[in-house]
Length: 52
Image (cartoon, rainbow, N blue to C red):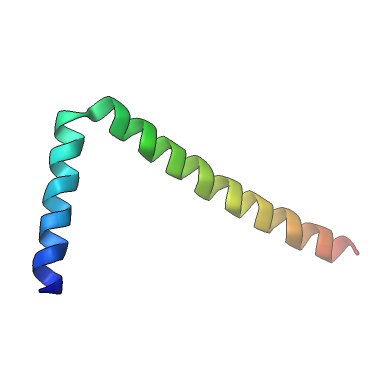
């Protein structure tokens, strides 16, 4: 059941990207920006930690 659900979700994702490429790109860009910000903040934390 889990495998079937995974395939259905993958199909829906590909279908959504194919029919709405603009909004899909905006979502991907937003996710990428969020992940980038998280890693930047983690780096800042360790730099501040090392500098005392």
